[in-house]
Image (cartoon, rainbow, N blue to C red):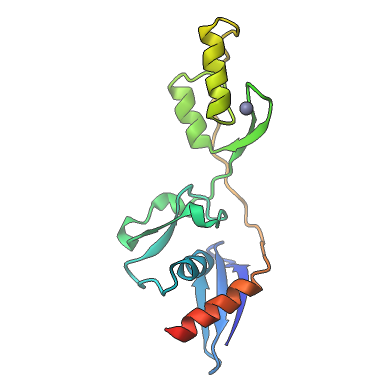
Length: 170
Ligand SMILES: [Zn+2]
């Protein structure tokens, strides 16, 4: 048995790995599923379990971004590939990334400033209380932009070995 990938599927734009079985049979599985099954140490249920990307970015294949959902609940958002926007922290000037939907929510709520994290937001809040800083502007809402098809590959040979071990055990 051999595993190849991850490749981008030309039609769905999603990452896949290809398993060539000893009898020559070819099996395609999604890369997120491959990673999740490795993590769980078992095969996922074909119909009842799917991997959902929490941030809706199908290219963000880190384990913290995964959750297992029944197929019926699988978020339609997941088919979208939203790009995060790079912003500069109003307090410390550090660059950070944020999804447009969150920026729009904050704009709608009239939240002022854009902060890389709670620490900077807190410092701003204290500065305001002590009247040491002036009110920052409300950040402008931005439209969502989507990733274009992008070929991505990574060296996952270690993971492939582990996966082969896993499916041999089952
Ligand atoms: Zn900051």
